[in-house]
Image 1 (cartoon, rainbow over the protein chains, first blue to last red):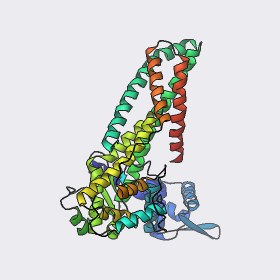
Image 2: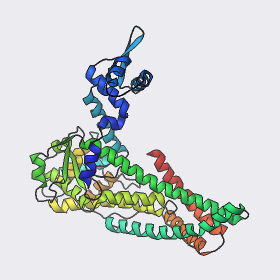
Image 3: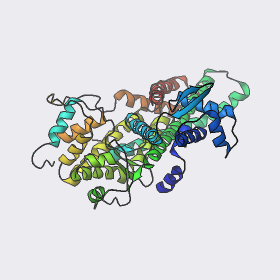
Image 4: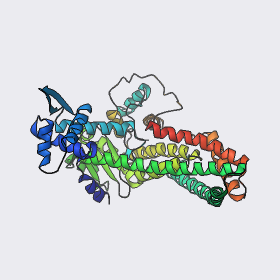
Length: 140
Length: 299
């Protein structure tokens, strides 16, 4: 049951899940090409689907606002490039999610070994260290 | 002492009884509301009926919203982490030997050390490569024993159910207190299980210590009993002192909850919408509702 559901979930690309299908497609092109103008991306994506120039421009402006694309002017045209590599992007997503797991454990239905890592004061820390380093067999 | 199973059982029993009373009350509201639609509001009882219907709608919305948010948050997180799944290292295989966890462990490549039990029908255990790298054989085995307790008791499922009831039954605030108690108690029992299985408290203590972030841990002397301990702090107290945890359920919460249920029973059994019992129900609803809405906003 869990395996089947997880397999179904895996079919959705992780970038697509967090970026939206069109945003993910644009990022994909940028990661492949390195740099591109809106026109370049429209032509690339136009091979598989019909997209208006303004639609792609809106998506790329949004990705720039989100900090995923950087841009510089070349005459009257903006040239875009990814602000981070695909791997860095996934790492960041994953790190944010795990941070979320710790911070917002209230919403995630998991039984976690250490739920709130930062919520331990110095006295408890010291007591735990003493217990961890106790000599002899410390069975109760 | 209210242990995890008993806390969960009491929670479900109270939730079912409360639901039955509130559904009975809702059933008496339906003909009244139909009448209201035909002729409009004429007396105080009509206003009470409208307000009660509002409370019921809020309860259903909060319950379903809690269920949806929990499932979505869990699915998104699990999906993201499992995209980074790697083969189970020989060290983990060795630590899990004889624990009955064959095929139930996932290892994900991640720089943060974490482990948890997830999924609802046939739960699994997820460990990060950072956690595996940071713990020795004994510590790893202690963590697996801890997680095995959650797996055997289907704690992720119990957590979803408990939170669903707490959100939906916000007019019975003691349900939320029982959820908090259950959440803590299951961790203490999982620790006890691990210590008993290892025959030594130190591997679990070392594992917990190894996973705390680096910070000053100057010994400040005896542990001071604090009213609002974090779950990890309460676990440390329990490991150090071995004393059972007393259930801390506020008297006001119990009084409000039973007052609200008594009021709902009277309203369901009486033909007219009596203002006095309805007022008590509204007080409990405001108290529990504010708390639940605050939880939604915070999350």
